[in-house]
Length: 163
Image (cartoon, rainbow, N blue to C red):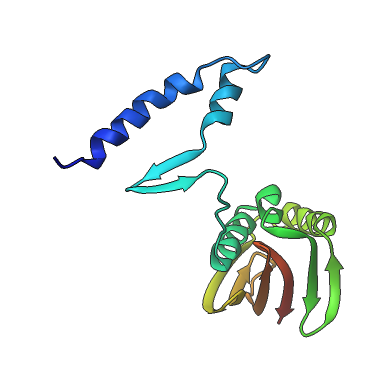
């Protein structure tokens, strides 16, 4: 007799809500449900919910670029490390720290309503993403530049800007 995977999966999914609805101390049902879910089944792969899913360096850079273009300061600063360092290429420190980044870019986002950046070229090398950008919104002319993003521990750690 051959055991099929699908019926077993249905049993697990059917039994899971019953397991999650038990009351534990003063916790709410919602809290209990969250605490009991420890595995996710996706296309026959069983994944622990404790497994940390890391974004690729490109995904981090793209996420901050999208937020930059939307002038969404919270989403913009989120992919950056708390101790982010910004440099004018190669090593002139422009600023350090996420709070400083938030302050500087909040002001830019407020003052430049048509701010927009397009990536015209990209090089990816391991944990480094190099973008050639064209920025509009600061007057008639576009500003072209190169930005080098260095990723460490799933956050943007250093940025070097060339114009």
